[in-house]
Length: 190
Image (cartoon, rainbow, N blue to C red; front, side, top):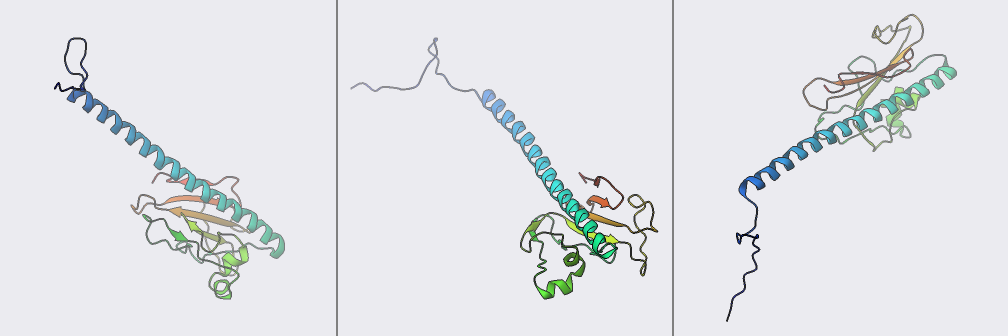
């Protein structure tokens, strides 16, 4: 009985296959492509998050101008420059919900600025940035950031979105104010 071998050979009769060097070249090429793809994916997701924050700041602008037309003043959601919502403790998980439901009396009491303004996400919707809005209050003057408010003696507001995607203590900030036409990004890539 004759045994058949199914290995292929080239014209010279040597068995065909891949050499170790050819396999290493393929592995290196795949590694380079994976590195480029991961970097591109991270840039893409960061840009998507930034666009989400810019959209929220645009919504704040619209709501502030509507509020001003009704009450002749702007509304604040924060009392100082360190008071952000939501309070995100772990930037690596990025699974923090907005958490304010202005149909609930307890949330209206706890977050009067956000509920009066009417800006924000749905209560259970996840957010990637923390937000704050500070407005001029003649009864309790606050010094606005000079880069974004030129005339602090007239009615003004500024909104800030911040995130620490690298978890290094340096924030990506996006500012928008009553005097700015476009959002200003600071340390976008941290």
